[in-house]
Image 1 (cartoon, rainbow over the protein chains, first blue to last red):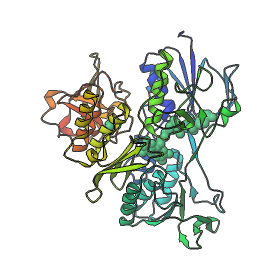
Image 2 (image 1 turned 120 degrees about the horizontal axis):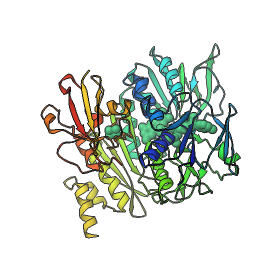
Image 3 (image 1 turned 135 degrees about the vertical axis):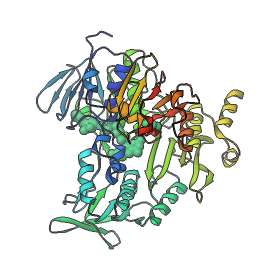
Length: 414
Length: 107
Ligand SMILES: Cc1cc2nc3c(=O)[nH]c(=O)nc-3n(C[C@H](O)[C@H](O)[C@H](O)COP(=O)(O)OP(=O)(O)OC[C@H]3O[C@@H](n4cnc5c(N)ncnc54)[C@H](O)[C@@H]3O)c2cc1C
Ligand code: FES
């Protein structure tokens, strides 16, 4: 690697920031440019739907690093100027302001943006999505006087926003199409637990409900009309129905995209010097069938570290165990592995005690574990999934067995 | 403001003023101390903010919660009796002069 090497990172989010930090930590000597659309230095998104809304965390708590970091680490941070075009043959990116950025290697870390439903009223004032600091500032201001909130979509972000709004004294409804919340990724027991929790805290949860249209009054959002004709009053509507990967730039440059920029096991996108990571990338995972696109801090950070190692050393297949967390009403759910396509579930602990884990099996093998306020189970799960160990449902159910000890013994005798 | 010293594995150190109420992790990240990763931003979820609290402070340090001690199982560097997750260590006036040692690796 020549010292004159130039590496361009497009997207200053979790993955982009971590790429730059890890490159320097690994001893990369070349030039690093971090080009970001957003006007502020890279910051964390998880607090935006949690402590930031309730005021437990403020703007100072969001940035990954202090003011001197980028200069000290010789990272050329270009803010507020998105890359609009990419020429992979000429190895040059062009920004909105018209700057040409030449590179030898490229990291696409453009993330994802929230979907908006094509329903009447989605463009009214008061209808919002939550992705950026600016979104969170806006939402926080609107919730400040304890108004009424309707959340469309019972996924992680929607439920976290609902919980924060309850804490702020708002009247909150959540509308979900499926018959349970967080249904895309968790087992019925886990969804049920969170449904009960939200109901107990006063959230009006409408399952198996579609939104027919967003109602307005004086040109502002005033509530929802559901598909069964019933109406819910709300002055703030948060749409949390998932995201679309930001892949237009990559697609226009000729890279293969299919709900995510397609990369191989080393996270390269068709060219050895072009990588795509984080929320925008679809990659082959040893923990799932086919390629997956994941939206988590772990995925963004671990993929960034993997390519930093590849740039300074030799590329290796990316195999980190996926993990994720959510916090609602003070309860912590930690997830390890990928549960998609599971065919059996075993539960350890008890829902009544607010301390349990759901173990997901696929084809007789442990695929994933969701742990509610049970970090020891989560830690053991990460290890078991990485090592391909499968505790039987009997072992899982026996709380006199420490799973980490079981796993260690299983590894030694394997 | 209380002072905190972060001593790296290679012996280099930085002493900083860290406001009461911030965590030892936040003091490091905001001042760009190298050697702490803090992927989860202080949520006690990632175990990449591992430090060794110097023995001189062992008694003044509140003991870890159950949650923190379980997450400590996940640290990459050797776990020792004085291992802590720095996002869980909140600065108080009594901790003025705190010395923490950074492990060689966080990830
Ligand atoms: C409200 C919220 C709460 C979350 N909570 C959790 C949680 O509790 N736990 C967890 O594990 N994960 C959580 N996540 C997910 C996690 O934050 C994301 O998976 C992570 O941020 C992905 O990192 P990324 O760098 O791939 O994308 P992003 O962080 O989205 O960064 C992408 C960046 O690229 C920029 N960009 C896009 N196109 C261009 C362009 N053409 N030129 C220049 N810049 C461009 C974007 O503006 C953005 O700044 C949460 C996400 C949100 C929104
Ligand atoms: S910052 Fe993640 S556990 Fe401390």
